[in-house]
Image (cartoon, rainbow, N blue to C red):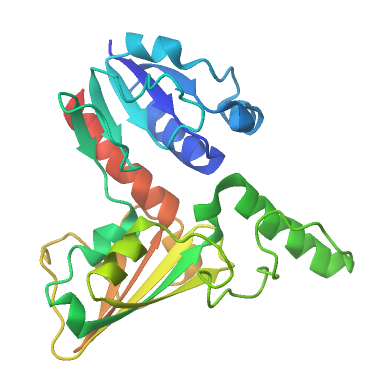
Length: 267
């Protein structure tokens, strides 16, 4: 039996991850950790107790880091000396065995086989990247539209329900290190915040013939699908054209599937 510590602050990630873990790893003994600010929503999802005292993480053999800790003043997570599966890019001590998982947008951009300076990318990110408050804001705004009420905004100060944010950077909404890195390396990128809760879209246009570094089953080639179709899958769908590709996937499910694949290898 393997003892694991799961650190998470997002109930959507936790919900999908636990459903996978309980089906595939019945002998995995796990404890869920989170920052106290998110403990209540996590406990409702996990149907159990969420540990906010990080001291017992040191007893685990595997740490699955699904969020960066806010309150780890003693660097307990940084000093963890077991095996780590990390989606956050957290900086651990040099002697720790860390398996880093690329989030879906980075996963796509890393596999573009043409120079970054030769492509234009439009990324439509779902509200789930803003966690519990982002999704609650979407639901609250949607209810308000049909009830003709004014609701208090949690994240999006401009209405997101049935709408889109076209300039999240100007609106002061963080869009993630992946986008910053791509822009810094010379990529022409624009970002939208989509009113879809978990589905992302990436349109990549090249000056000439487009290509991928890994084109043998890494992405699923499809000709037609809807957002509802995508939300039932754990892979990234792609529509190829002569000089452009459209990538679509469920942000949460793609990310969790990659974590679970790595967990299979580790244990």
